[in-house]
Image 1 (tube, helix red, strand yellow):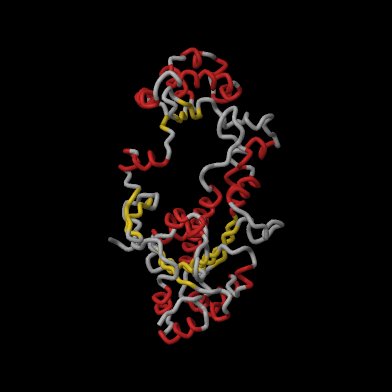
Image 2 (cartoon, rainbow, N blue to C red):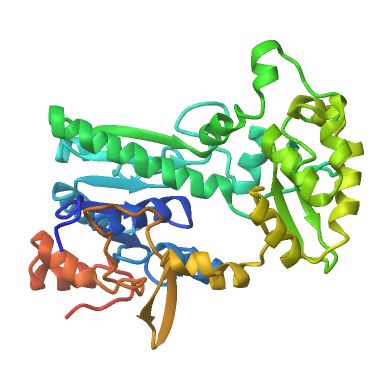
Length: 395
């Protein structure tokens, strides 16, 4: 197999929880050597907070432990930074600088380093020091005010949208900086704020406001809430999603449901008109879908070419024939068991992202990484005696 695009690239990852680790996992899948720096003992908080999330986003990494309360730890990180291409941290703004690990110091040590800080509110602004989690960023960005269904109040998304999107954008920004460095030889600093990304995404829902300051009269009546772009319950109480936004799909949907009079009605002849009559149309569609089981509806709609699909719980998703055909999953050994993982979610014609390491134990690779960096066995032993690795012992 040919080398992956990031083979030979060292990433020093001081992040924890979800955004940073998701970012560095994507880089690791593309060949980067990711060294995950954890605190002694519990390591990354996500190990105990939600173990399944830790397992999902920390493959292909090596873990080392360093106690940042010890004075010599700064020197160890700085030595590691000399051989690092990409530095990722998710401390609150200002913490890395207080630890002597901020961009200005890392740049002195390694002028070509690409340094990415991931935080909730960014490195400047009135909220920069405010703690937060996914739900707080969703609320501030306005995402929790946007309903997903007709006649229903807005609900919190089931996925950690801010966390995942910031990890993805951080990886995109890092790769962009990496390409720029190939051209001009310069490293740079990247400030990724979760709130910035969500506000960017909110622009696709706030078009009328951004254009002319207009707001919907009711939160449950918004331009994206088309009655033919919704979820319905079939006779067997199983969910089915319908995406019949365009007129051609709307007509096909009405024919399948045997409610032809709706598409023949000029009041419903466009999506904009249908949105204005959403409550009335939604009630008609809901009643129609209750007449047959989900499997029967999907068969009929598929045959007619109407965008549709089942609303699954995730165990059904993982067993779906199409998902399995895409070979999205693979199994790797993990602590004496078999751990199912989701592969890098893109398919290339000339390369295949590689999986070579399971999620690491806390500090599993400390001695190995330090020796690669130039520390002798005697130096490692001395650092251990000084408490740099916590209670770990490296003879």
